[in-house]
Image (cartoon, rainbow, N blue to C red; front, side, top):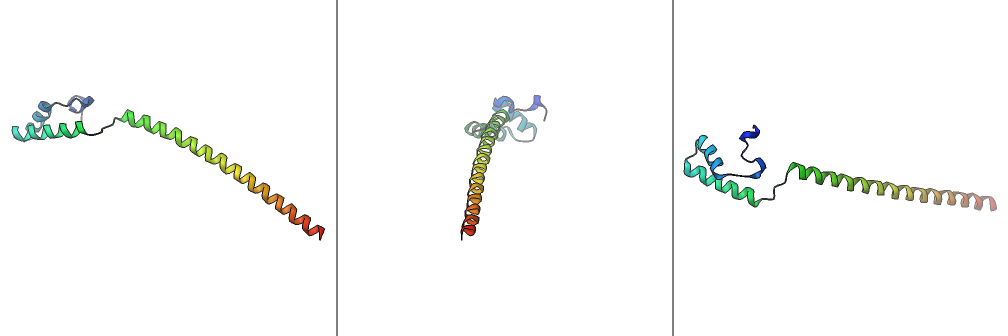
Length: 101
């Protein structure tokens, strides 16, 4: 659909424009007006978002996700170093115990 024919451009809906397009497609004037009014009511009462809003939200979400992943990696490395240190200490303790006996 070309931009000039898009009746939803900038969300400025016109009952008349919608009605005329519906009439051109075969609706009666009464049907076209009714459908147009209902369509406008549904669109105006809905929480519609723009692509720019979604992109901004997605960018923010990606940033938060990267931060969470980085923090998780840091925590994982801390745990691994701690476990490796404990493992080494236990190994040396076991060797010392065997040699002492």
